[in-house]
Amino acid sequence: MFRFAIVVSQFNEEITEGLLQGAQEFFAQASVPADAIRIFRVPGAFEIPLAAKRLAESGDYDAIVCLGCLIKGDTMHFEYIAEAASHGIAQAATSTGVPMAFGVLTTMTEEQAVERSRPGAGNKGREAAAAALDMAKLFRQLDEGIGG
Image (tube, rainbow, N blue to C red; front, side, top):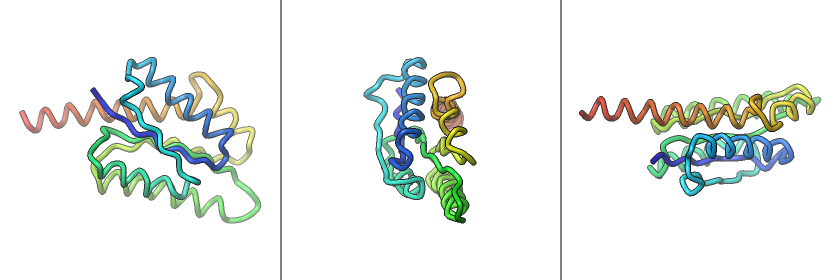
C-alpha cells in the first residue's frame, strides 16, 4: 500500500480547498484508502517546500502532493513566491529522493485559478495526485528492480 502526504496552502483557501478536493477524489477513485493519505496545512505557497521536505525525510510517505495558489497582483511578490515555491519543491524532491507533485497554481487572474480548481478532469489537484501515484508506482518498480 502506498502512503501519501498532501501539503496544502491556506492562502487563497477558496481555491486550494478545490485543489484538495480534486486530489482526494482522484485518490478515492484510484482505490487509495483514506487512511493512507495525510493532509498538512501551511500558511502559504512559500512554506510548502520546507514542510514537504520534512515530511519526505520522515520516510513515512511514498510521494507528496504540493497544492497552492498564487494569483498575479500589481507587485513583484507573485514572481518571487512562485519561483521560490517551484524551485523549493524541486530541490526538496531531489534532495530526499521522494517524488513531489507540483499542484501550485500560478495564474494571472482569479478566474483562471477558479477554473483550474473546479471539480472534474481539469482540476489541477487531481492531476497532481495522479502524478504522485504514478511516481510512487515507478519508484516502487525501480526499488524492486534495483533490489531484486
